Image (cartoon, rainbow, N blue to C red):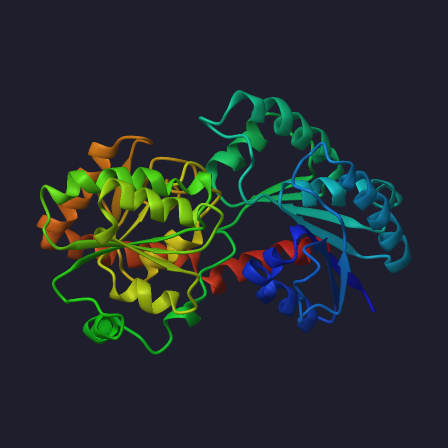
Length: 373
């Protein structure tokens, strides 16, 4: 039986984004294996799982060990294709597969979920990650990008990969919204102890520096001057959650924020909200934003890569300049005060999100897989 290997930094990445793609390849008769760090996570859909000591730090000696281990695995399993994801997962995979790809029996695909170097990123990122990605491109048959900026970098900077593709990401899973609709909004609010009159603003994000929750907390004072009854709901966990909870108390705005932690009812939370926001500093193509738009929520987000691929400024939401609290608050106030505009943007958001559904994304990947398998 022919085999395909998926490689990433951690196994959680597969559970979060790639199970439909693994299942598709299995339905086509391929045996599918996965390799990553994070051994406590198991991928039930994979035919075989390998645990590698891949480290996010590009200078970690663990990555050298991971390359050696993966070389041995590829030699034994003789995969038809390796599909790698994430920065260091792709480095380890391509270094391990160089020899076998040259021999002609293995194809290498790499999905970029957002290059670590980007417009506005620290110069050090360009010094470390850009040369690394450009060098390894020559050992890659196909690079798949999910936003316009990354696609343009590959085309304009002379990367040496065989082919370059742009797809609409990993896909919105409509199952999150099965059995619920806009008509259920009052019932969902009652279930979660929110009034129908409260203006609910949702932010779905891990509590890490990149997601910039601090910016939102510091913007609340500007909103309090104009809106009496509003609340931000933060869905997610992460190392900075407790720090942000304390910061909200320090600012005296904790009554305006609900820290919900990890939730399995994200579809319901989105549907009961009025708008979505993102203060993120860096993105590839954020599915949290796409899902909010799919549910008809206008979005206010930073004017960065990934967001600009989803949000058409003034059409289905607003884009604000990073760090501009006043602009962020003004766009939220606009949506709060102008119900007609909010409703119009709701329809446009749903329309735009259709291109990012799992069905569309899977169809695009099927075409790519068939080119290389």
